Length: 350
Image (cartoon, rainbow, N blue to C red; front, side, top):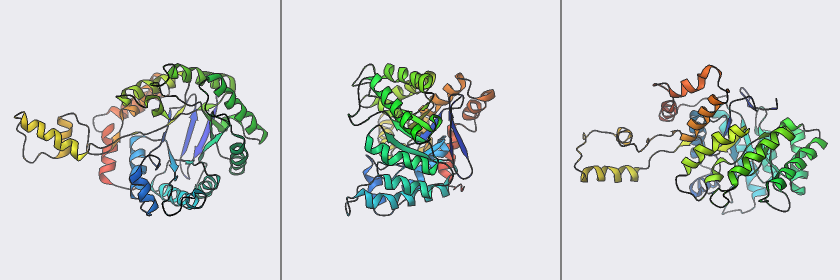
């Protein structure tokens, strides 16, 4: 069985066909998060700290670290990203004990993250583009780490799954030239949005099976890509993940956290209740109110996708004695564990 080993200073995560699905938490990434990007440029890492703790409490196996901020004061990421990457890696591995995934399009930032990370992090990523292969594969060999291989090349992202498979084969073969074994390549076959391509789901399931059977590699994806542009994205994601796991996918880069209900939504619902003549105790707090009216929680906790993944682990016989499923659903545990961890604000140090 193919097994990809990712390690922190004290903890090992195994990505493999016979292992529980590996959840790579995606939240520490300023892409599309203007508030986080502004905080990072200002040297404020408080949101990074909260995101690290919340994702691990929700069940993330590995944490992705991306420092891709385009500074207003200096738009050159080759200068700004490496020191920021090092700073974030050092902070996060002081807070949580899970392994890290060093994520950047800037080779110098990748190396800065590798230098700062303890253990054996996952590197994200290499593509089939010649320039990228020449810059990233030597880093993979030098630091003896596994790498995410994305199935696009100098021609871009193909809509033809056969082309994406051949790009993956090319990367695996080029890695072998550097002495990098196939078990250290985690292929991202690229999930297309189902709203734009109706066969996107079928394509990726078939690709994952081929990658497993013909190349013997583990796989990953940006899980939420499949639902981009659609309503009820969680509903689509919840169906996609177990189906992908059934096809042989072994990890995903995703958000494991159900985000807290916003104050505005709570206020709106309270107003609706009052208009409907519902009389509530004056001292009812927001958390009790949210649970009573099915809004969710005021605290971060495991998202519904995590429930779907744990159920898939159970059905795929990757949950020994059903222990993880029972623990996740016990009355005093499950989603409550993540919320209590977020409420306490306690830090776990490696």
